Amino acid sequence: MPRRFGPYGGAYVPETLVPALTELEATWRSARRDPAFRSELRRLSTTLGGRPTPLYFAENLTRRARGAEIWLKREDLLHGGAHKFNNALGQGLLARRMGKPRLIAETGAGQHGVATAMIGAALRLETEVYMGEVDMERQRPNVERMRLLGARVIPVSTGSRTLKDAINAALRDWITNVRTTHYLLGSAVGPHPFPSIVADFQSVIGREIRTQSRRAFGRLPDLAVACVGGGSNAIGTFHPLLRTPVELWGVEAGGPRGRSRGAASLTRGAPGILHGSLSYVLQDRDGQVAATESISAGLDYAGVGPEHAWLRDSGRVRYLAVHDDEALRAFHWLAEDEGILPALEPAHAIFAAVGAARRRPRSQRIVVTLSGRGDKDLEVVTHAAR
Image 1 (cartoon, rainbow, N blue to C red):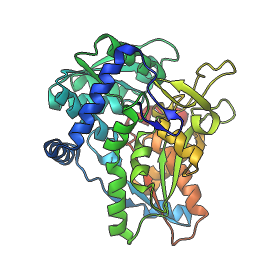
Image 2: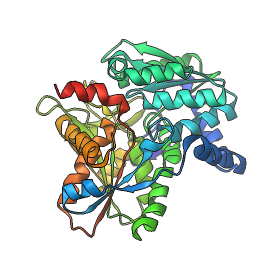
Image 3: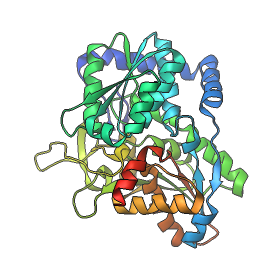
Image 4: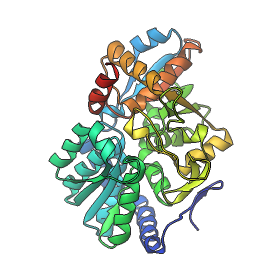
């Protein structure tokens, strides 16, 4: 039975994919119990990826907020510049374990594509990445990185030409080439077992937050904040903290102010099926997947991982939306206050965290997962300032 999170999740896929999903789940569960696999994962996470990533006290940003202390979990310092490395490495090792010589992936902001290309090169796996034409235009540096790393980048010209359509194209490829190909899905979305696998490999973020916060300030944080598109960095942050008293916030893309629903499926969507699972989805009046709009390519997605849907309904995590102009303000705050260029995705979380810090006493501690660096977004930020 496909795993569900409350009513959410499942595996709504063509029969062709059922054996591949069953094989993937069996391989993952076997690998989790295998000391050799875990050792290889730890070794490459450290020597290739650069884990553990540091927990940084943003003293100047805290001074701006004039309230609770703000700390940054620096996933932007991971190899490739984003948290995407964690899941790409884990799934790459699973593909090798299954004897599949080819990786395919989808990407929006390009960070998952870059991570997949890096792992494909390191593990000697053929790699092809599907990317919407709109995202290729606004994330050109990452397109060139993928090509330099030996991956083939395949433009997607259908639909909105963004992340949703890249996932559609990758799924079609996988159906056709399932025997030789592993679809390295980049976020905590899609049919079971992908949401659970991604959460497993990304939970290193939250485990390190637990250890590092106790070392840095003697206890767990009062609040942990992460941005949410599909939800991989957020579920990795939240998972190891779910059974603790830490308050958890997920921050979605509210898009341009007053023009659309942005890409905030948890705050503005309704339950529906997208890309093989039941979760919250932005839909039009006829139940069709609605167009999304966000300045951040990585959050520009009409759905969200099913575990996030369950965490929303249960009340364990609070989800809120931040508009494009607010994310841009936070981008500049972090750049000017701390000398750090954040990706536009976690800039949404930074804005929410500064607002929370202003309303809380100085004795409280807030940890924000800085899921990626902003090199890829410089053209977008510069254009928005004109």
